[in-house]
Length: 198
Image 1 (cartoon, rainbow, N blue to C red):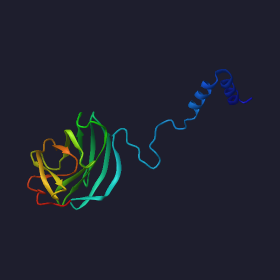
Image 2: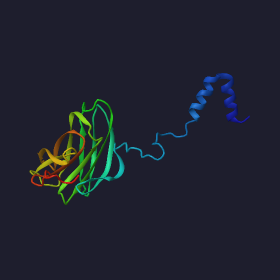
Image 3: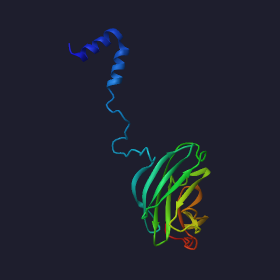
């Protein structure tokens, strides 16, 4: 008798149903590591970021935003690394512990627009509010000591509204964000307050 048949006969005769169930449990799994469903992209476990490609339908400041990154973030908080399209800079979006009561898939994209002299951000899901403010650590191209302004696009008035300011220190400027929408960062005096483009 072949060894496998002998083993199965032994399991059926000596160990019974439990042995057979154990056999099928051990030998029925074909994949040793978890994978993403067919047709989807698995997250990068090292960076905790998924790139979903260019957002071809979203336009801010007259051009397309960069690649969207995303991550499931819950009560413990987390950080997204946001590459700024048209630059070699990467900004950070930090969701502090206790900002969200339940897990939410957070997305972010960014693009520098030379014409507007501004970096545009789009965070999602649109309209999400936080119990504690999220922090945008904007990687600045301006020198230390430069005052930068954070703008929020108000869809009701269809205008950019000033939401805060920060000074560049060690190459970054940090802003508090209470909800998700479309945002922009530019140097003081290069304002979008006249309406700007959506």
